[in-house]
Length: 392
Ligand code: PLP
Image 1 (cartoon, protein in one colour):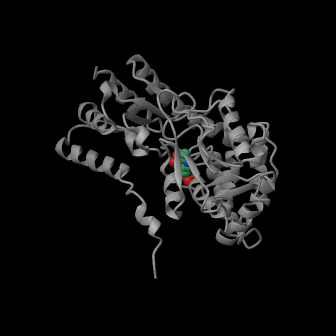
Image 2 (tube, protein in one colour):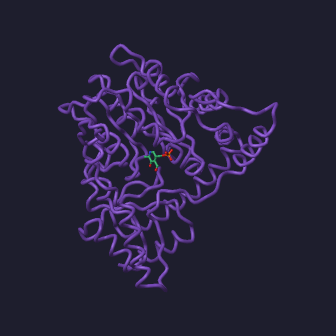
Image 3 (cartoon, helix red, strand yellow):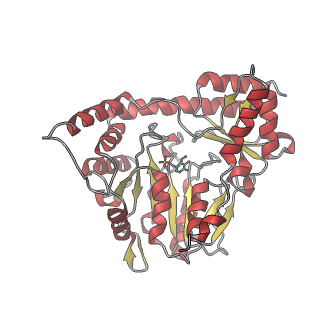
């Protein structure tokens, strides 16, 4: 037998393990110094009370013969798909329930969607990037080309008419940069995709963090996107579901490629390889969109966004170039004094005991940049900013 050789082409994901290794070594040598972590991409606030209550009720239902539920529809319960359709309606996007697929989170679907595309498609991925887009394509041996994020375009690369891509990844608000595309910029991507018969894979995992109402929070707010885009969203960051696991993927009926409905292909793929998200979790997810659930999760988002503001205001004060933080929980800064990403990591750890994520870990265009996350505790964020201010 032979293994899938493509797996051997994957680079070790050493980023977070190297961060941990360096922090542990520092702590061993400096046991009295308190290290503050602003590197993590995980949330820290608990689930909203409305969500917990709904899940408790669902647990009780599962313990009664009359309300017990076994296998559900692979694509998710109607009640949750309808709730998400109503959520999109508030964004002026009309979706039918059969265009919405409930998942155990965006990461799985972002990888799994590749099942329905030919291996010979060329994939266009932004650099810097959420590493899952790259690795899932390397695993199947697909050709990857990159669109360049840089200081000059504020890390929002736009289509290049001379580049031929079949599958285009866009992430807005972006991880790791926190940059957010405006309407005109997304229009140019949709126009490129329609012209070149390409499919956009739009990752909107951080849509709930957008504060500026003029910015799109779904690709379907752009005319024509239903003919060229699939959208992935997640309750992980919106509602603290990183450990609870629930997301959703939208595949419009109007999305037809190679004379074939991608919605039909995805349904076939999901009903074959996936058996749905637990009833209890879907009930919790439904509660996120209830009046109480929305209010409570919004309070958590506001807490994180206040952290983001504190970070970005400190950087402004220090004249450190950065993007993100106004409509996203990530702040992407240019390392001062032309330091490279890992040098700045070491500098911050040693001199301020603040931990961030080196930009170089997200792609070669991330070299010289650094990601700070707003998902930490307020007290820690305030203290970290005080220490960074005192460095100068
Ligand atoms: N997409 C982006 C851009 C992310 O940053 C993450 C998680 O960090 C995900 C998707 C994965 O989300 P989920 O927890 O729903 O799998």
